Length: 93
Image 1 (spheres, rainbow, N blue to C red):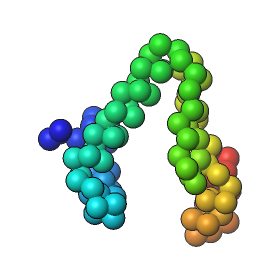
Image 2: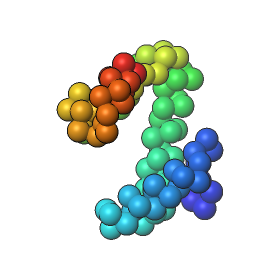
Image 3: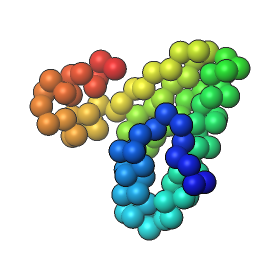
């Protein structure tokens, strides 16, 4: 588990370290979960599967064939947004 998943930046690695600290879990556990999620997503997209990843309180990652879209829950967007423009941008994603 030494290497960070391909396609994710050093900033993402720092976020994982912070998540690990807040959840009192080893960083390697957080990275393992990310790698497993990416493998499932890769499988779904490469085989044309339809599936949804539900992120409690955040939103839903929709995989439909080769199309992927993230739908954020409106309450979260409104809470996190520092400006009305950011909230509207996220809601349109």
